[in-house]
Picture 1 (spheres, rainbow, N blue to C red):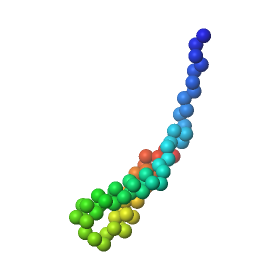
Picture 2: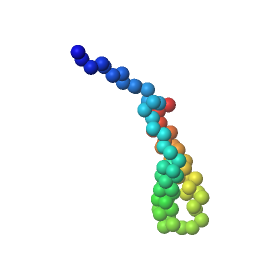
Picture 3: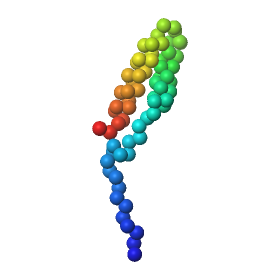
Picture 4: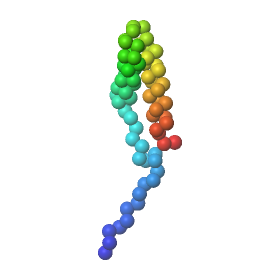
Length: 67
């Protein structure tokens, strides 16, 4: 007697693993760091770096998230 055939779940939503907030903040901080580094850490741009890093991170996650 053969083993039963397992069903394969092809629904991308079921296979999607969300990113938890600490991981998000770590990645955003990393992106912001590299932005600051590219300016030789010139002061006064920290907020703008963070906001731009958030935008880039969200854009990347949105592109790679199944809809």
